[in-house]
Length: 194
Image (cartoon, rainbow, N blue to C red; front, side):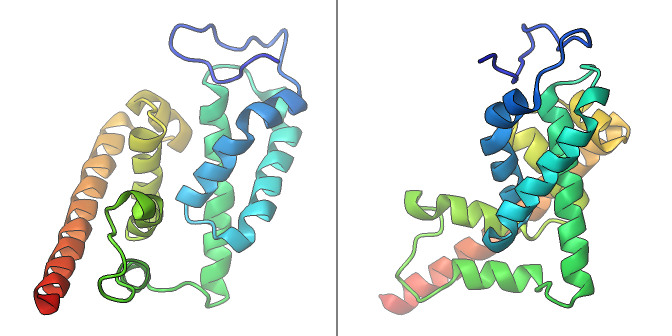
């Protein structure tokens, strides 16, 4: 089975021999699920959201021209699906305050968790991503977690590269402030416990 995650050295997919939906699905299922979770899709909605992404992929695969990496193209679809779910959740009144959610996930019972420890690292990352608005979250995920270039991100989001750099800088600053708050909270808990 050919690998559809091309890197800089690999040639672009050609329009003459497009990948099949099965190949795309097998090569990118984990990537799509991981991306959706990082984009804020809850576990309860993950299967449906994954299905929605691949429905769009199936419908639009014949249009894929190979001008970008297939994962970049699929990430854009996942981002739109996740954004739609978040918009629906807000419309139905289920959206929680992002800061309160981070606090609830990270500051459970005192002394029972290490938010930066190995066991809680993924949960902490997902909680921290909640403090970012959709635009900054998408740029941060694509750049820092999926290692996409600024040019690829700009293409997916249809924004100038300068905007990519600006959003990434603002996302990093916001995350640094959130981490500082968590660390300060952990120090207060530790002082109370001593």
